[in-house]
Image 1 (tube, helix red, strand yellow):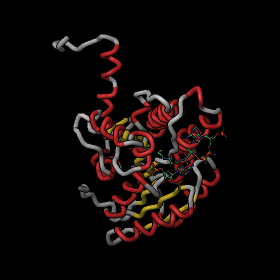
Image 2 (tube, rainbow, N blue to C red; image 1 turned 60 degrees about the horizontal axis):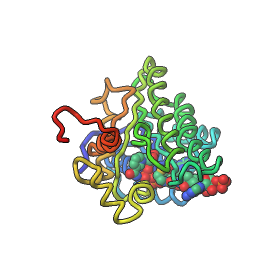
Image 3 (cartoon, helix red, strand yellow; image 1 turned 90 degrees about the vertical axis):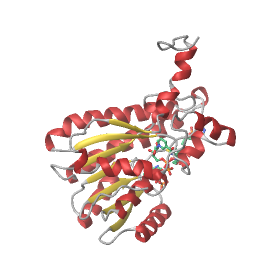
Image 4 (tube, rainbow, N blue to C red; image 1 turned 60 degrees about the vertical axis):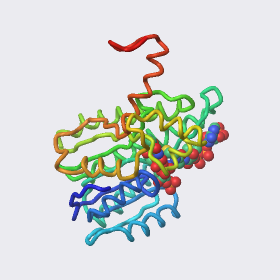
Length: 275
Ligand code: COA
Ligand code: NAP
């Protein structure tokens, strides 16, 4: 179920917006009549996303796709120049391109660590840095897509945990630096979102893992694309006009549950807890 907010004549750029969670966000904005630019590395993903968005968009919405790898600073700059020429200054920027794989730290190559940091952290800097000149001032909303491992370390994700922690500090730092220009910068931290590459690859590669992951969510269900897209629609809107520098989990309470085993292992219990 999607909330209803009118984005007519607003330009929304979604980096990494061609599949999964970020595509769900792009789709939600297209349904709210925005002018949507999606960007990612692979031409086939860009083409497929543009075609799918064209099929769901409401009257007035327009869609544009650009191929750019977030690791390439100049390519990211060219992507903004091209999209702004077509749709005007950027009202909402979603930065969500990421890569990840499970690997124990002692088995990870230097390049394996570096590639994830380059995409998730350096790539986010490239996107926000190149966007700045094109953001509507005042009024723009920047939304970074982070992950729970930015604040709850996860085994076999040393690279992504470190990179996403950096993404969150980038959010906070730029909220400080850009607040005076009327630009808000926030992070969304999705929980396990069913049907996505990240969920399948990292959290639920097997049926057993899937059942375990469900047990970690206090609300007892996996998230949907709309759960995340609704928060993005809200953060991009004037209803969120006084929210900046925030990291907002959208995870059914899952991040709370992940710290429990560590506390229990340390023998610490809350007041009134049994045992
Ligand atoms: N285990 C251990 N190391 C791995 C690995 C794995 N599963 N997958 C990749 N690597 C290592 C490679 O061996 C290589 O290191 P090396 O040169 O020392 O051998 C390094 O990572 C780069 O791999 P490469 O395949 O060249 O990178 P890429 O730029 O083509 O792809 C990834 C980037 C690896 C992050 C790829 O998984 C990707 O494109 N992911 C995007 C989608 C995604 O992960 N979505 C999930 C949600 S974020
Ligand atoms: P996904 O479908 O793999 O989406 C990743 C997107 O980024 C794709 O559009 C991909 O397209 C693009 N991308 C990857 N590398 C890129 C690069 N170097 N340059 C430009 N674009 C690049 O993954 P997802 O699971 O939906 O995850 C989306 C975001 O949510 C990520 O930031 C992830 O960390 C976060 N997240 C996901 C979950 C979850 O449950 N899935 C949970 C927490 C956080 P191309 O391949 O065409 O480049």
